[in-house]
Image (cartoon, rainbow, N blue to C red):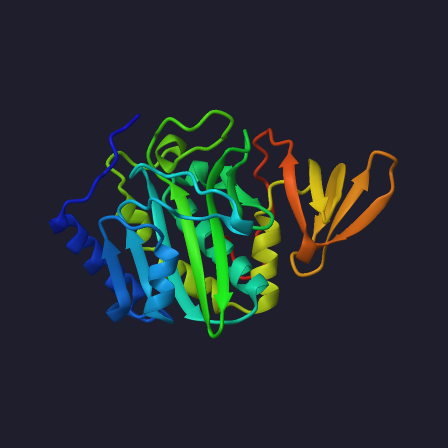
Length: 278
């Protein structure tokens, strides 16, 4: 395992300066950037700071995942960042944040490797060939504040048994790549995605969705279904062809992909309206 890039107090100030610069001209406020050496949860700090806040921790010890799932502590090898904005529809915030984070991740990789990372509905960034998780998004809305929580794996580490994950270092990020190199790009990437028109945003999400065309196991309420995912409309439904050949439309709002069969390296997809996500 590569040693975590633990940031000294001087380096944390550099982090703050770089993140503040990355916020300028976006919906996020450079005056509300908070960089902490360690904290329980960046989500809680961002919420208390208010809309426009960007909160980063060198190490987060009690983060949380979507639907209350346990967060795997990253031991200083990954990115933990929360961004607060004015409340709007959770689905749109999740869609835009996922597209924005994907853009930042792909930009960190060599051009030949960028398409190795894509989206798994509704909120995961995954590796194409083995399906390992690269990152994830959590959106929490209460009253008039929405907080977007982001976790991205950067450096090599030993993962708990049964967890399939991979970091940018293993995906080909340049030697010497550090967490701040990704962090400073996230406010701009996310703001740009959230400000895109709905049709363009949905098209980018769909174009980057790796399980489409592959065998999946989905869950909707108390039902679990298996088949081939033929199409995804993130604002509408997942169309799955079952083993009996029947195609069913499953509501996107209440359906999640439990597992999928990755594999291959076919990256020949037509770029969506608005151009490619580099």
